[in-house]
Amino acid sequence: MGFRKKTNKNPPVLSHEFIIQNHADIVSCVAMVFLLGLMFEVTSKVAVLFITVQYNVTISANEGLSEESVVNHFHHGLKDLATIFFYMLVAIIIHAIIQEYVLDKINRKMHFSKTKHSKFNESGQLSAFYLFSFGWGTSILMSVCAFKLCFLFQMKFYFISQMGYWLHALPEIYFQKTKKEDIPRQLVYISLYLVHIAGAYILNLNRLALVLLVLHCFVELLFHVSRLVYFSNEKRQTGFSIWAVLFVLGRLLTLSLSVLTVGFGLSNADQQGLDLANGNFNVLIVRITVLATICVTQAFMMWKFINFQLRRWREQAQVQPVKPKKLQAPKTKSKKDKANGVNGVSSNGADSPRAKKEKSS
Image (cartoon, rainbow, N blue to C red):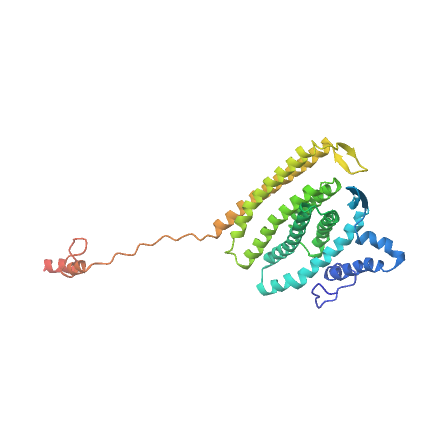
């Protein structure tokens, strides 16, 4: 499976250049090892830990007098790290497929500069991810609203996939040869995603986190799609204006939902206290930490947003050409002035040299 475009040079095996050129093939082989492990009874028990979600708890609930329903609950634990690792490998493979068969072909047609090339690749990858996350998250919310119990499995798998994707972004910094000046920025937002998603997953704040993720993915999807449109035609900047409004509204909705859910909802819940066995973390210090983390993150995002808008306005001001001053055209002599000049009178009322000569004679 050759996902990356191979160069004519053959770098030494296991060298840095060899790993970068063939990283998708290497990761595909590792993922196939886990899939082949399901075919053998000796290794199937280990392979299952990497491929399927763990900690499935079946609870039977009596409904009425004769009917009985079975509800599957999913807890979390250390075995989830194996599942997250496997889907991190899947994310690397999908990243390489999108890059090779979609983005590289568009780059060759558009002939972008090096700066636009890297930004186009970044927005292209994130647009595909945010579109997938928004669509999947919306379907889970619809299942919750329809009172379908199958959403419990989907929700756990959704968060595992999210953590797997953002973990895959760390090795991609090396695989994509990211510039040194861009590495700190990418490490910051990757860390923010991992901290918030993993924190919500561990603290059983899945429903709140799902709503906030769907909202956030929609806003970010609009930004990166607008960025792709801007690269194709720099005059099309309407999407950025719509995104700016939705970004501010998204931050306000995030703060409002967080305060209402964590600050008021959980504080008045029946189940209070710390219970690690049942996954109950509804204590004051945890609620304060969660709210403080969300508020600091939203403030940081607004600060970055304001700086981005100011920089964008300055760039637009520099691009606008300065209108040159209109030069006044020299006044042309009228027919009357020309006649006076011929008859011996200049335009300013003085005698012309010819008139002076005639007078002296």
